[in-house]
Image (tube, rainbow, N blue to C red; front, side, top):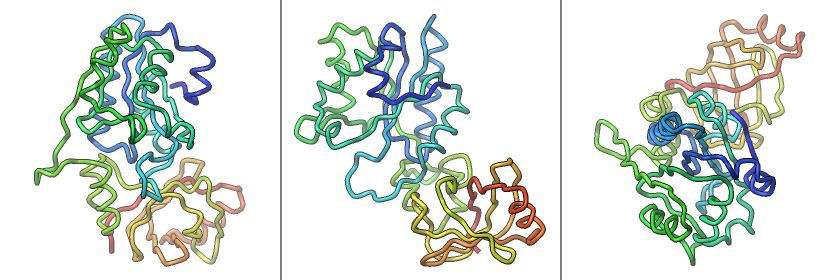
Length: 276
């Protein structure tokens, strides 16, 4: 999978002559609803000769009032790569970009590539608040530009209880500390990215300041957890979240942490299981 900055890709014209099946969204947490859209895009690209699959996402959540994402761009990219996508494109959602109109955004998409199919969810919206459009406006907007792009609007996936699977639901479950339920919504355990975080190895534990973590954290408490090192080694243990610190400890304890320190192995991420 190739990864691109949206503006740089647009300026370079690297994909302007490539047919593409696309989906666009934040994909925060890449839950089962997102996976449905992405799987459809990959499937559609494979059906058409010389067509690539493209996922366009955002560096930050465009919705106001969301201080921390469920994931990071690194984790999102990793999950989407597993799904067989050809191109992962990140929009730097700057103040300037936030002022782009719905029409201006579609002009960018038709300049970026040759859109053949665009797959979005029912609640997809784009453009600045004063000049926005919905998923149901896309078809006419492409036709006005002479683009032969089929628009497919996918229905949401529901939980067994009939609730729509969304990033909002995933966020609510995390905020309640019900991390053991996350696999029902995303297909995997909740994962905290430790790559950008300074850390300290203590007497049988790993300590990280919560201020250095950019994702949404579960509430204070103890959780079953698994630490992944950047060498690919996994260690089961307990993660205790306090007001200022995240502490991971394991029955494997000191020998493992001493080996990490000796070999210069850095922590990659932590997977959260049930709350204890």
